Length: 159
Image (cartoon, rainbow, N blue to C red; front, side, top):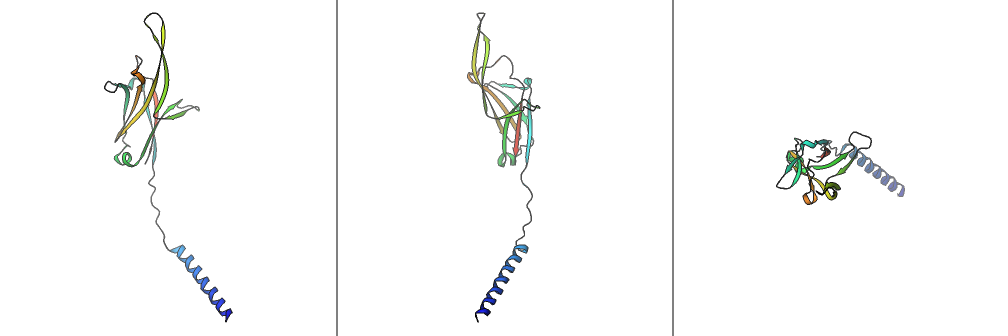
């Protein structure tokens, strides 16, 4: 009687495993969902002559219209901007914004000599639907007589 019971249990176990495997192969097949991850890098080039000065905020800025910054990207995506140094060379590197630079400028003191002025340059950005603005603000609002130098920024969109 014990042999019949063991044989029966083996048979039931085998059928159970077979049924589970069969369900695993044919059961819940899901259709693959389309990829909803997109990425794009956009270079933002600011020529020295393109910097504008905002007298209300006492800072330089450059405005870019970006059609890829739709309402969906603005609301659900990720935007990051870096300044690129040594662009187009093997030594190129990026610094994420906001960034601060410690600057020194030699100025005429009016008495035939010079003085060094130390200040901090802060570069940041503002993002809105359809646009980006790069903003450059100097501490103590100390600005040279000319626009800041040309700069290249890299905007990464992930949506």
